[in-house]
Image 1 (spheres, rainbow, N blue to C red):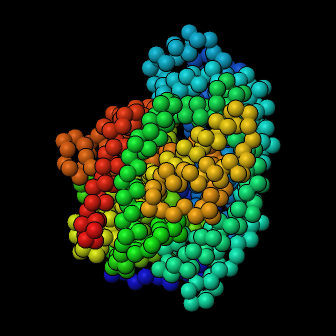
Image 2: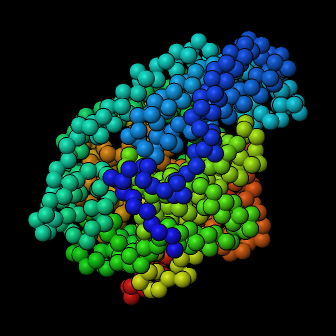
Image 3: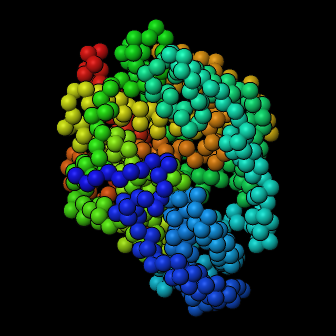
Length: 603
């Protein structure tokens, strides 16, 4: 077993051994090489600008698209080299400066290339159709098809420029929300049952909610929610501003409403959104039963919102694996994906894709960053617990999605959509859970089943609850109304009664919860968590059952990048999200695991 290095929020970056850090030198050997590449990019950019007004000529168009992709690939590598180093050590001024230079280059490139889409959409219809038939434009076939599909919603160049310039002025709602929550809100210090003081903040709220100390949980809940409640009118106004801004841009692009505009970006029909909400509404009973089980097992006369995050088992410590042990478990759990996947996973674990431990100034959380023409990078802040092991599986799912796509696709079709992004990561989580359950003792099984039920509750049920709220608020804005705090709190109160059922006592403090959800400032995003989780669960079930062709279809999905619309890619792989079947499979699994948990608990 490898020795675990000293690490933590006070550990300087330079004391972490290189073997535990990602190798940014795989992008550029040193800073000099990065600077030379950046200088070359600046020299070449005017060559792209020279094609402006020339794209009706096919030879010029092909050269322009080829050069744009080459430059985009270069700028993505330049930006990754800078940002990866900053995220690993945010306190390093040299890293901050490098990121600033990279951002300037990125902005310069985007401005230079912006004429291409406008000129393409202005082409005559017969010319557009002709381009789609030409073999020499096969690399860009899907990008062109999608661009032409959206042409009716793209304004003349001077109007698009004006809309682009207005973005900063119309984003005040979201900016004000972030400033209020991150800087100006003052959360109280609360006490636990032993009269010890604890800080309440968004950063430690969920940690407090899993504490066995019910007094701490209650005081943290009321402290946080009451703080937001004090600013509920301001937060209703910031949300109104964001919704109105979204309505403005949707209308400018000739869409009837924000929902239609946002869904059309991925060519998603509104019926999918509505069917998702309806399917979940028709299957709320298992969630109600889960809440009743929690109430019974915990032995509370009343189950409150601050009780539902409390684990039903104390077996978490039995999964206190070292990083190396966790990687071994992940490898074993993902063996059903076959040798090709296993070989790529081993390469990632052994070739410095991953930055493993926390250090001073390092970004919190975890992410995967795919870099075309190079290997992916994964940021972790590993801790010896099951959630961290699951995070490894999750982020390596993203990483290998990028790895397989980048090997199989040209740059033009390598950037898979956000709609597809969470599928690969969550499939890995599901496979890890099932593999770990097979080897677990009864107490560990209680913990793991609880983990699964919480994942479905928070990623499917809760995100659909959010999605339904978004539909409500945007419909009000579309009708010309203003969002009033009282109306939002009344809606949120009733929504929690509907979703969680009679076992949960919906305290008045919960009514202000809508005001703290940052995702509402990115309209109609959260439903993708539910669809992604659903697709992943469906894939994992087919793979684990040994269904013929399931692994091959899944790997082909991972290699598909953006060569087709998201729904089509998933459908080809065996998951049709326009039908209730995948959602029902996830909800049925929730009910099945709930029954298994009840049996283990003797309930």
